[in-house]
Amino acid sequence: MIGSVESVLLERPSSRNLHELVGKTGNFKKVVLEGSAVAKAGDIVRAKITDLRGWTLRGELA
Image (tube, rainbow, N blue to C red):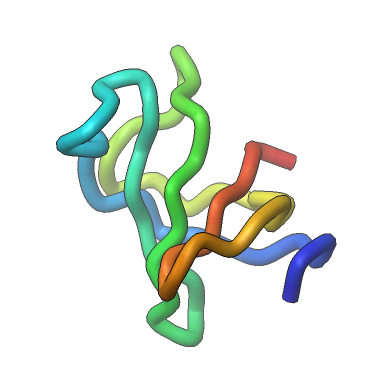
């Protein structure tokens, strides 16, 4: 899954870092993305998965 581009439904800002957004993939995997001025909760975005930490995927907007 690392290196792939996934559709992610953004749910909320991260509780640990307000500059990051938390969402879920189509497989209900949790993803933390670097924040964006244009993306907000409720948006579906394309994200490139860059890392895995425990059960949480990390990524960036594609």
